[in-house]
Length: 293
Ligand SMILES: [Zn+2]
Image (cartoon, rainbow, N blue to C red; front, side, top):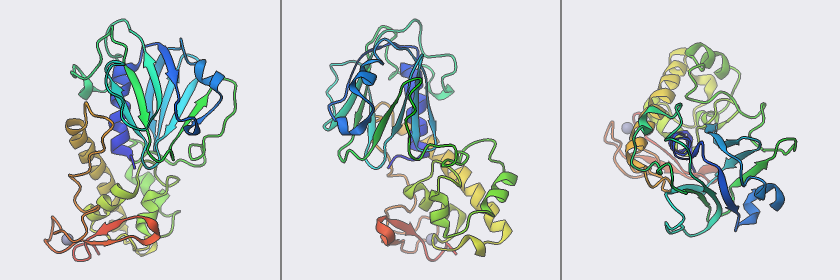
């Protein structure tokens, strides 16, 4: 499931590669994925992409009139095809073709994308493609003037982004006091902080040396502070790795550098003991019972 680091890379890259271009064509061979009418979908043709960004686990595309929200859920992946002739991945269920733009990437593109070879040439006709083998993800068409619910993205459903500069240690301390429960559940709760899912919650807890099933109420103040530091460093380190590893195949999810998640039975990179793995609640949780307390 794409989480904050994966989606941060996508948002930066697609903003740099596509913003400023007009939509030439759009099709949705997997209509179950699209929330909106065929007429609303075709009305994107001719609109110019103004901004592509991430908020929580959602990607947002802002055009000069309408908007699109993407929730990739478990298996949704986005491809940036330099031209329509690039072979489509299997189970591609949404394709948006863009036209030429004047000049290169927008001025507010992320610095790490500057001069990247995978940014389509100004006169290219690149495609944004969405593939989703389980079709659990959703693409919400949000025409101006149409009220359409985007579940999980409402103002009461999304807390501050886990990498938001305004989420200071003081803000963190105040927020964590209001959220009880097990630490893994807490980190995955988008109302507490947004963008963290199953994989990175394991990584963060390993970095903080805290066990996933511990209750927030048992944390000493300095442990809550350590958890904050682990959120920031774990996500920042992952983003740094993914900037190098992911482009130009944005449709692949790179997870092989993680320390504990999905590494049950392997040696803990910190203490060398065997990593424990459970599937409680239907999702994998990996941790080290020797150096996480
Ligand atoms: Zn360990």
